[in-house]
Length: 194
Image (cartoon, rainbow, N blue to C red):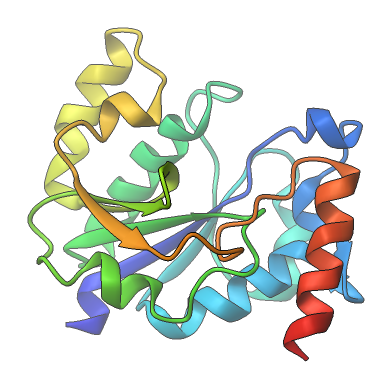
């Protein structure tokens, strides 16, 4: 069943609240942020890719396919659509997405998201917060999401309507790094895990 699940790190954000830097390459504990995210995520999935625009060569060291959005700067839904097409071509039945700025994701993330099967979307919820970039997407959703996108929808929450909500403890597991203060907090959390 493991190879039936593909994974994709959403790394296409523009990092506006970080001064426009490439968040994937932000140093965290001496390594790029994406290295931490991939280290947590890779053991949990079969085929793995990175969703990002710009020069794909910056990710060459990771040896993974880099999927560019057909519609750049349109938000993560465009990346999910590209990822679902790639996952289907790779023979996967579902795609799990994880934002690059969640380097402390749980080591049982994919197992928990897939507990209810691969036929229905699932989204991570911690406390009362929905983490729409942390989700399971059956590849059969691809045509529906393409139609939604063509109709002008860009919000992941709308694309995930009807998804199973998978509860996680309200902890730092989905701590997003959006600001310099968030990066400092992540450094402290990472140091505490050592």
